[in-house]
Image (cartoon, rainbow, N blue to C red; front, side):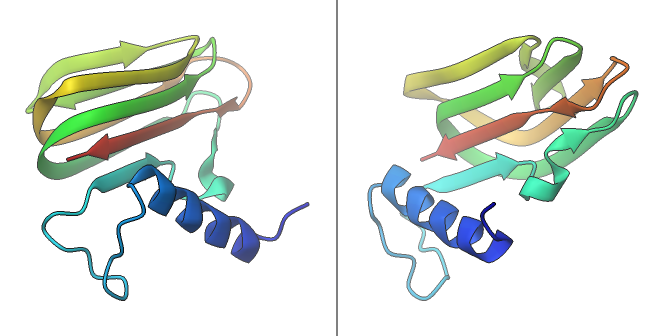
Amino acid sequence: MVSDIVFCKEMYEVKAVIAGGKSTNAGVPTVRDDLILQYPESISEMELAAGDTFVREIAVNRRIRSLTVSCPEDAAIVLKNDNQTFLWFTNEAGNEKFPHGKEIGNLRIEVTNSGSYDARWLCRMVFD
């Protein structure tokens, strides 16, 4: 079993590789850096209890370049852009690339588990 600290360090390195190895000047991102959002934010929150819902809203105001999701059978991930459903997933896993980008303003992520067991899910997005 990998400790939480080791896992976080490895994920930080993976994040840097995905972003093209750009430095963040001691943790403070510059305007030109990619924005990488990953939900759930920690591995301890990866399982959504049966009948539970996860909702997160964030002002992004950037173009989405890549999206990776993992959503089990009895769960649904809904992504809304400025209160309009942009994408939704259920019983899917994979990566979607947006070569020309899609402008995202206020992003709302809604994950619902309608099953009788805990659902392990993931949503990772890379913005220009």
